[in-house]
Length: 381
Image (cartoon, rainbow, N blue to C red):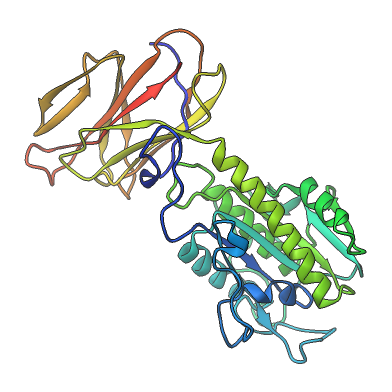
C-alpha cells in the first residue's frame, strides 16, 4: 500500500471536511503574571471580582471568538520593588506555581498560553525563546526553595530545551509599531533566567507540547513567555499585553484555518470510540496529518484497516466500512482507551484519490468482544 500521512482534530470538530468552529464554550486563552507590572498587565482578564472589580473583559474578547482568562498573585504594597512570593494564585514559588498552573490549565484547556513576568530591564518587552528543564534553579522564598521534583519534567532529559511557540517576531513587530516607547525584542541566546519566571515559562511550553495535535480535544497551538520591564507603567503594560494577545490570536486563527479534518462516514459502534484525522490537506505531496482514536477500551489491542472502497459489512455486532481491506496494522490502545498516530498520514499526488479507515479493538464490555470505531474518508485529491 502507498505511504499515508494525516493529522487529526477533536471529534466535535468533524462535521465537514474542514474544521468547524469550536463549539461553546469558546476556546480559551490563558494569561499569567507574577511581579508588577506583569500582574497588572493582565488584570483586566481576571474573572475574579475581588482581583478585578472593574469587571472581566475576557468574554469573547473584542469579538474575536476567544474567552481570555488571567491568573496572578497579589503583592503588598501593589507597587512593590522587592516583592517576595506574594499571595493567591501562582505565587512566586516553585511548588505553588506548579500546583496552580496544572490545575488551571487542565480546567481551562487553553488553545494558547502567554506567561508574563518582570525583568529588571526597565522598558523591555522581551520574548523568551528558550526554556530549560533545569536541575538547579535560583532559590525562591518559601521552603523548599527548589522545585520538587527537579528537573520538573520527567518525560525528557535534564537540561532539555523547549522553545517558545508564540509568533515571536510578529509580537515584536506589533509592539514596536504600537509606539509605546518599549524595547521589544526576542532573546534567542541564554534562557528565561533560571528562576521562577523560567519555571512558569517552561510549564507553559510543556503543556503546549502535550497538546500540540489538532486531534487532541485540548489542542494548544501556541505558548511562550514575555518578560515585562520593571519601569513600564501599568497602563502601557496593559496596552502592550493587549497588542501581544491580538497578535497571538491572529496566529492561532491562521493555524486553525489551515487545518483540514477528514470526513466522518459514520458506522460507529459497538462501543463509544471515535476515529479522527486532521492536519494539512492530503492532496499536497509531503503534507502531514495526525490520526487519533478516542474513547476505546483501555489497555487493549486493535486493528487499523484501510481500503479504497466503502462496502459496509456486518461483523462483531457492527459494520465494517473499508471493504475489501488493502492494508491493516496492529495498534495498542493506552490506559484511557486512546491511540495516537503523530504525522502518520502523508499527502501524495496520484495513487488512490480516496481511502477509508476504521479501527476494531478488543473490548470485553461488548457482546461480541470487539468495539468498532466510525469510518473516516481520507481525500487525497
